[in-house]
Picture (cartoon, one colour):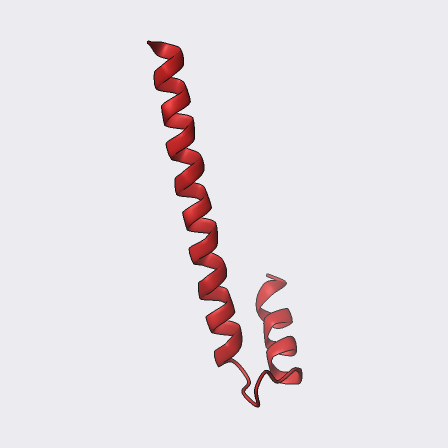
Length: 55
């Protein structure tokens, strides 16, 4: 995987508020939450559309 070495290089070389990895973990969690909420919204809209088409 390219992600882990790249994550390690960036988090070790670029400090955010004087910390190495904690801000990157927080950004990753926030990104995952946003993606999950968008996915749930898309699934809900798709289910509504499919139900309307089928009826």
